Image (cartoon, rainbow, N blue to C red; front, side, top):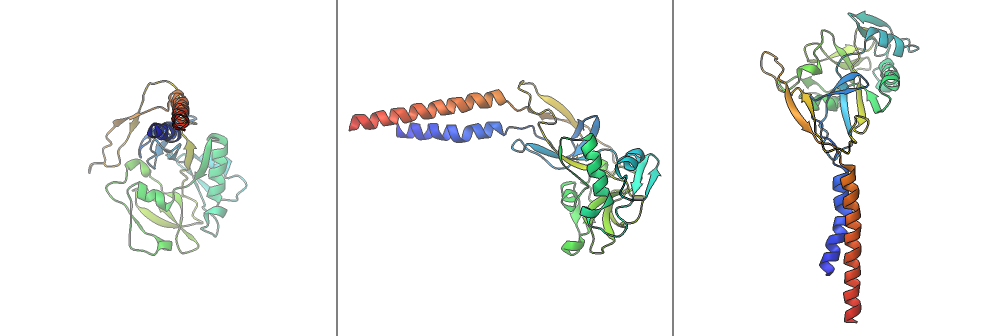
Amino acid sequence: MKKISIIALFMCLFIPNIVINAWSEYKVGQEVEYNGINFYVIKDSGTNKDSVTMLKAEPLSYEKVQTYSSGTGAQIINQNGYGGMQYHSRSNLYETSYVKTTVEAWAEAEVPAASEARLLAGDDFEELGYEIGDATPSDRYWIKTDNVPFWAYNSNYWYWTMDPKEDAFIVWNVNGDGNINDKYVYYYNGIVRPVITISKSALGDNNDSESEDTKDIIPNKQDNNKKEISTKVSVANTYLKTSVIIILLGFISAGVGILIYYKIINKKK
């Protein structure tokens, strides 16, 4: 009976946690819509993680860059509807950049549930299929591979990242052909593609129903002709009611096991 009580305690302490953390799974390349804005998932997020990181599918428009960069002093340009802007006038530090101010102002207004809003970083490149070339850690060089998805660039223009080079006036950027290049911070034709991290609850992942939601994804790998192949991935919902039931059963089982154990000890005495 002592073994039964120990097993019951184990069920009570550990099984509820496993079930509560059964969030939906998001894969790199999955398309997600939030507040009418389309994003692509850039980091795999399994069932034990309650947030997901995504890249905005389209760069900020010229009008939005105008609006959200107001007061920074950045020079901007209309790139056929997209907003090109300076990173900064003299520094490659993201924390003091014009683009950081712009991205965060955009996020506060249009994706308020996001816990973080930023630009692509070096670690994101690896998730997207880029490889690190021969360079010092502070001056990394990224190489495009066949695994880099088309949507990660898919533009006639280059866009800023938050990854600086050793030179205080240069930042890495993603070119229109997908290669990682460097640009001076005072160039004002770099477009802006925000990255956000947001809770899965904000994306609707708190449904008690037992239905499954099927979402389109575009896989990382493409053929030589860059044809995109659409596939499907099933996304399971979080079952909060089940978790509560298992928690209660765990406590009951533990309590019953402990009572039985102590009754046996008292009888032996």
